[in-house]
Image 1 (spheres, helix red, strand yellow):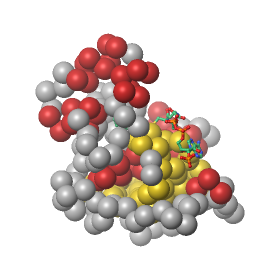
Image 2 (image 1 turned 180 degrees about the vertical axis):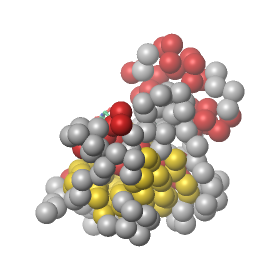
Image 3 (image 1 turned 90 degrees about the vertical axis):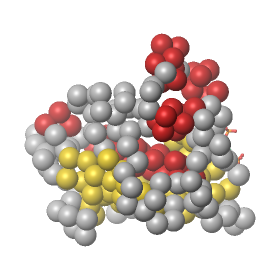
Image 4 (image 1 turned 45 degrees about the horizontal axis):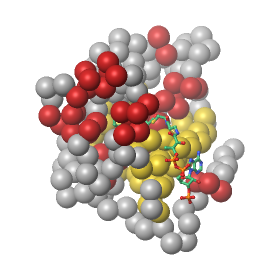
Amino acid sequence: MSGTSAALTPPADALAPVRHPDAPAPGELLGAHYEQCFGCGGEQPHGLHLQARAGEGVALTAEFTVRAAHQGAPGLAHGGLLTTALDETLGSLNWLLRTIAVTGRLETDFVRPVPVDTVLHLEAEVTAVAGRKIYSRATGRIGGPDGPVAVRAQALFIEVKVDHFIDNGRPEEIQAAMSDPDQVRRARAFEVNP
Ligand SMILES: CCCCCCCCCCCC(=O)SCCNC(=O)CCNC(=O)[C@H](O)C(C)(C)COP(=O)(O)OP(=O)(O)OC[C@H]1O[C@@H](n2cnc3c(N)ncnc32)[C@H](O)[C@@H]1OP(=O)(O)O
């Protein structure tokens, strides 16, 4: 069972996405964009610690291992957690475009239960761009990268200026992120040029 709302269908004049010339090479790990990010940061003990790897074009793969802290039903991943993994994976695509964008809409199909200790193998791609709107989709498989689909999602990300974070985030975390000695993470957060 699946369905997609009209808001996630690109308009007729949407363009194909263009990989930024400085995007990480295919196969390269993207790393965390922010160490406190629940999706990818290394400093969140119960976070997903999701690792994304650049693919060809505007696509990537990612992996996340479901831990006991991620349960909903006994022994099974919480659905919202799986959506978080999809959101993080889809959000990482924007680094391949060198665009700062946030999730506007995200629709998830939960196809199979995902047990604790399972590795979720994700793949995602941008399908179209229309002005500030970035359309993308992702799937998550279990039992291996070619295993059965457990979750799939379609999303609409909206390009924002860095002011979105500066105006809305808490000053202490903004300052900490701006002082990050990792130049790439700082660039992903604050110096991205579309
Ligand atoms: C520091 C780390 C860096 C890197 C950051 C990386 C973070 C990775 C984390 C994963 C990603 C996240 O979870 S991000 C966090 C979750 N998301 C958020 O917090 C976003 C909260 N929402 C907002 O701030 C706002 O609603 C925005 C920015 C999404 C849109 O506001 P806006 O800028 O005023 O734009 P607006 O005019 O409303 O919309 C622009 C166009 O998009 C369409 N649009 C807008 N929202 C929707 C929607 N939900 N569904 C359909 N369409 C929509 C509008 O119809 C319009 O189309 P048209 O009229 O032009 O046709």
